[in-house]
Length: 429
Image (cartoon, rainbow, N blue to C red; front, side):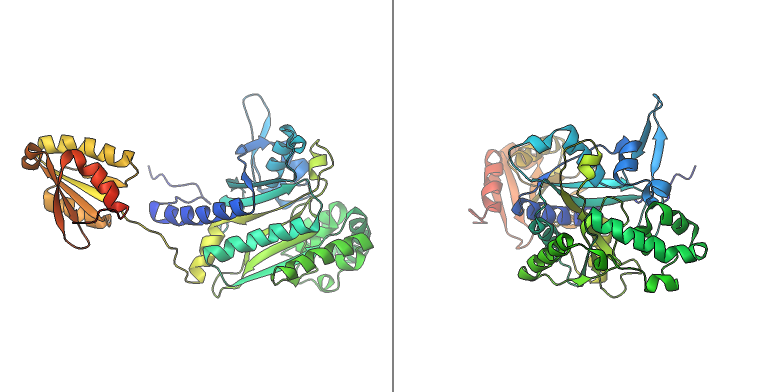
């Protein structure tokens, strides 16, 4: 039987997971600097959460969710995005009642979407995201965008473009909605079947359609920016002014609407401009979603966040020919020859690891020359050589593989010796 990973999924092998760990560590350090805390939510949720939180009219809910019934007949869905789950956890655990506000959260999580697999877009995708709940200050919008840009820059990307837009408050969106219905209704039959439905349910999403993007009606469609009321205009101007103060360059795209129903006010995307990156250039996207928490049964709570795909981040690094600084080096490798020495090497290895030393040994019964080759493959700094003869003398040979220097050390002192040596205190005297 030829067993393969399901379509739209991939195995992350050690040569790749080290790159992921490098990027994750960088991003976690940045989140600490910005005073964000990690949250972990279930991989599956009640289907209604995404129907209400993401929106019935979205492609995610209508076409892309992995939904199933459990043995109790309850409809459950593998999470397709992170914001709704975080908002649900915020309400359920009454995080709005904690003394430290706003609540600033981040997560690393797999997401699941049933769509046509292509490079950088899989059915199981891995996402980093942040959510800030409890503040309607436009400075928070700027902070969230700043955090996202900082993540990309500190991982090593340089060919980036930030695109922003305002979707306005409910009044502005209602006025814009009416204008869109009036604009697209005369050409309704010329639009794709999805957009014909969107015209009734959520006409704003017509602007995000990939099938109808070249339709003449798209070119002169009413812009949301022309329907912003004074409050929404002022909000957007403040966000832009904060970005300018931070030295963050941006472009305003009046057609940027994002694909989820819960967005309002600020919406943004970060794109790769690296040559050869591919047709889908978006690396991350997000925006403000005031009203989502209330929709899920919580108090009126403003929120903003974003999600960035890890697969696309690594694709962008590859497109820019940026090498991830991964240190693949073992501190020491224990070479043992003889039955008693082999047994003793297990104890030595345990004691080395217990004091924080990265160590390994042979488990295939190979000869000494082959064990030294194994140490070279692991790029080990030192080799500890123990035979039955050394064991009788209660000594062990310590060899520096970089310099070739070798020294005999008392067996009972080798762990403390290696610890001091690797910390730079003793060296090869």
